[in-house]
Image (cartoon, one colour):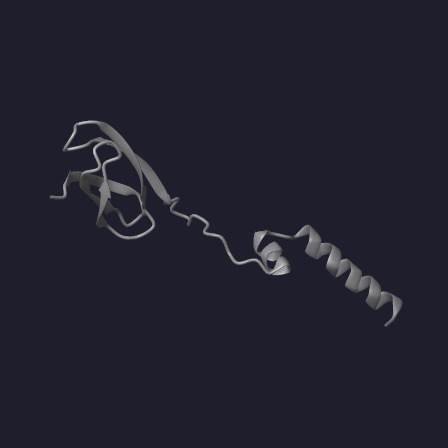
Length: 104
């Protein structure tokens, strides 16, 4: 290898260090990609507070906003009764509305 080709290779490596980004670091260390919010700034989740329809206590829970609109059952943290939590998630990944009702 000639001196000029070594210098050229060194310059290329130096430029690669200057231009490094998160994806380059991941490839360099063999890391898997981490969830990054997309351009529309959708949230991963949100914390909701509401009154339990059984015991009327104010309770809170974190809800997952990474999928589509859905419903699920969660127990009240105070009286342990089952609550049906329904989430309506918009196309942009933000919570449009929610409802909490007795699941019996």
